Length: 444
Image 1 (cartoon, rainbow, N blue to C red):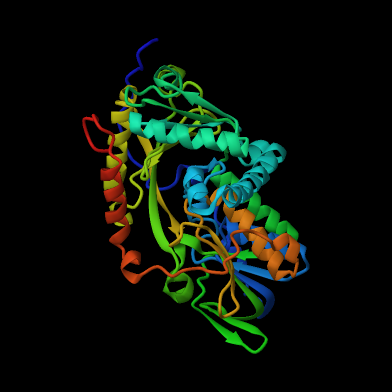
Image 2 (cartoon, helix red, strand yellow):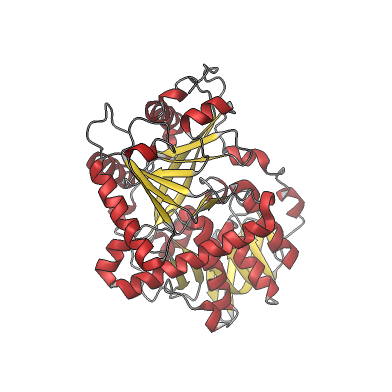
């Protein structure tokens, strides 16, 4: 195989998501003609969850206003890796041990429903959302990690019917051009989207259904009224019958009950310049999505045009350190893939998701009567819209459609110390140390 060519080193680095380049200009100013004085439902947060809930509610005959503090969709919905799978923070085997095989299977059946909904949309929308059914390879950086990984997916194959391929030390080299992976698993039914295009498509569907979506309009307070709520914004107050909270990792102190139940987690990504085919053949010849099976893993995908590598990790770092984290990620990429030592990095960015105390997503109604769908723990591309539909169905009184195991009969609060700005970096750095593969020349 030919050696990778020397490419130009880093020049100006754009501190914005690569995905944002495909989004149209922000047209929020066009909505500044004035907000309605009264609507049926105010949705707080206009990311994937918010716009999908707004679409279903508007289709059900409700007048809906979705508000966002920043540009609609500028949070994690357009800052993630674009991977679509059937995973959340609980491993299937561990869930079987904790809850029994029957209940664990039911949870993963819902994850399959969420994945299937995006895959079906992808088959319909195709390039409009950057859909690629490309499989996912999960690599193991040590023999111990490999045994744990293959044990998990063998059980998933047997009990869930997932189509997988176990990869040994030689086979992983056909997927990942790195000297450090000891083997892995290929999960066949996995895909990817372009987060910027995916969000715009979902946003457009909500508007076509009759929902109004307005950015740069933070909600400053919500007060219960006799027949609903009064929502305060810098642009006026809005009376509504119902409120749906869809702020996830961007939930602030305004929403105290919700903020007490969510731990925001920052994740980071970088994008390379377009790579020649000779480099792809050396590094990632089959252009799938990838991650490893550490608790603080690195993850990779590729742009829909097949030219750029997008690489993420260093999850939990303080967002104030984006340039420093980008430099560390660049070093990680070049260490894991020596053929990329001279590749230029063009974009670096961070996005924020949210974890819950029990590491389950939650949908329900809080004691003040506000509906919510939150806490996806890195599974928001599929679970956000899925639980948005559940929350909207409940609000519309469609009890059968609203049924889900993620219905929050109990949504435990997180201790204040665990929600500190410094707690998550310390915890995830500990995980990086505890899961460190033996024999690597440096920590990653």
